[in-house]
Length: 296
Ligand SMILES: Cc1cc2nc3c(=O)[nH]c(=O)nc-3n(C[C@H](O)[C@H](O)[C@H](O)COP(=O)(O)OP(=O)(O)OC[C@H]3O[C@@H](n4cnc5c(N)ncnc54)[C@H](O)[C@@H]3O)c2cc1C
Image (cartoon, rainbow, N blue to C red; front, side):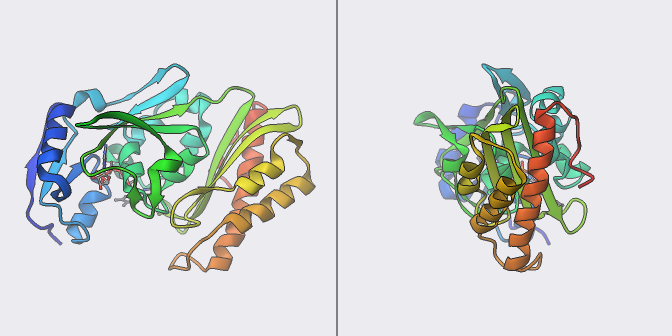
């Protein structure tokens, strides 16, 4: 199908983009990678009267390290993350997520910021980055603000972005060693959205888990943290019994919907299984092993 007619603008600066957004208001949409917006326009689920294409704003490109954080510009593509040696070394959870997102074509165009702004309940970036300390920088004619990812994600396909705001950066704190992370996704076929996914980021001191974050994807209207399971594990020695109890708490925290990808019961079961796998890989990585999640 063809999208409805729209005006197209290609600003060169953030100020120009903000001015256009203020003029067009609710009728405008920011175009980043277009990998979610364009299919929605073709299906006429979205029919914006104006597209503001930010791809020519050079200052939004790339990724860098700044004060112990990985900072990704709004135009940082999935493929930029996949190619980053820094991500490979310090944030293997992100490498897991990007390796399982869509296909090469989509990864070459789609952006991390666009994925967060789209807030698909089954999206990989919202779920994966919730296990890390992630903040977004947002600008509007009123100035700039920083918002934590858990506040930014409000509901399915809904964020706390005002109509005149643009995401300019996504920043992730680099975990301090001995840390390890893993993101495990269950999909019906390669490149598909998740049936369910779990991210685990932890710090191990000997056999004690001194800190842990557990995120759940496609297991509710928005990705969430399994905080009771985190409390069960935090500051405790890692034992099989404790991990079993944590897996039960992860299943309880999951609030999936029944859909073509599976029943509520099936997805809850998956949540526990994926947690156990993700925890094992994250712990191995914290001990220095270079294990992959792709064979799981
Ligand atoms: C075949 C296919 C398979 C896919 N499989 C997966 C998958 O397995 N896992 C997965 O997570 N995703 C998947 N996707 C989605 C893909 O990851 C998209 O790249 C992503 O959801 C959106 O990023 P984008 O840059 O393309 O955003 P766009 O499509 O350009 O925009 C999406 C929404 O975010 C808004 N937006 C974008 N950037 C900004 C910004 N900087 N500030 C404010 N608002 C903004 C837009 O206005 C729009 O509403 C798939 C897509 C396709 C086409």
